[in-house]
Image (tube, rainbow, N blue to C red; front, top):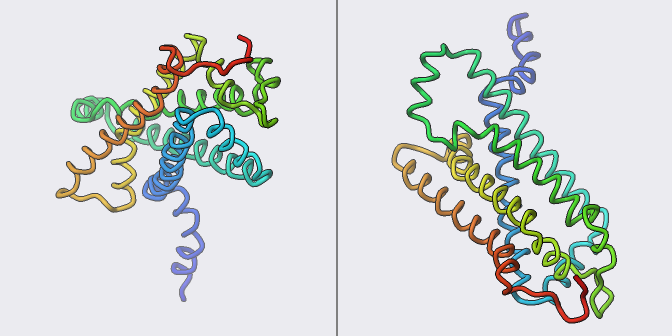
Length: 241
């Protein structure tokens, strides 16, 4: 092996990390993780409509995982941070590499979700932090620490209802979920493209799937605060406001 070949072999890991293709691929993988979490989290949340016992049992099962649960949460946060960081890097690289005239011309052909990915991603991350503080760490409302059901389990059912009875919190949640689904409407299609699963024949189908999926996620998530504000989900007897 000559010196040139050795130098290329040694530089390969650096090229893999710094190339735009590698960044897009890692973004696709981290986006896929977030994609799976969004689906699983919504399915878990919607159990609140089955009743207090169901959602509390679900929450108890999650917390029984102990350190493994925090490991999963940590992995998810790392994926989100990496996704946003790489997205910001790619956007900056595009701004630097393309002339202003070309960038303006291209923006006319690009949908709003694609042009705002970096901003919606950052806002979604801020919402995730607040959501963790509110319902996981339970540091935003002192009443949450005192809520237990008749079986001694932490009363997640009542905690969610108390939280969403505040119209400002519900409004913030609905807007944040809207931004998340707006982000997903382009992100899912972009993920398939980065993984090489997209072509001219499937492009329109994948774009349609992305919009339908994002719409279903939006309706599923906002159904809970709307049900609380509309009085369809109410506090069980004995829980004070």
